[in-house]
Amino acid sequence: MHTALKTLIAAAATVASIAASAQPFARIDTSAIDARQARQEERIQAGVTRGELTRREARTLEHAQRDIARAEARAKADGHVSPNEMRQLVAMLDRADAQIRALRHEPEPRFH
Image 1 (tube, rainbow, N blue to C red):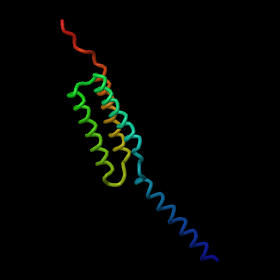
Image 2 (image 1 turned 180 degrees about the vertical axis):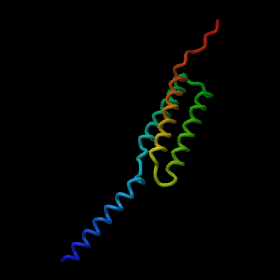
Image 3 (image 1 turned 90 degrees about the horizontal axis):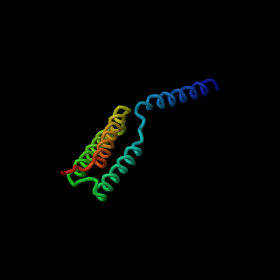
Image 4 (image 1 turned 90 degrees about the vertical axis):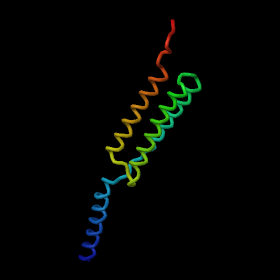
């Protein structure tokens, strides 16, 4: 009975150590990144439809979206997204949001 208890304790310790060592490599869910990027795409298309964006402006915004998608793919390439990679993706999305907002709401030039 004594060896069975030792075996059980050793097995529990092994499971605990595996779980602890796996923590730094926990996968980070990027569905929020994907959803936010989808909303940005919708805003770009709505801006084109409503005449708030020129084709050139839309193309510039689409390039930024492509850059974000590539950065996300690079971050996921090793099987997980680190917290630092996630921060970088969020920062890229923040810049894209600001750029979309600025271009869609900039006043039209007035000619006298």
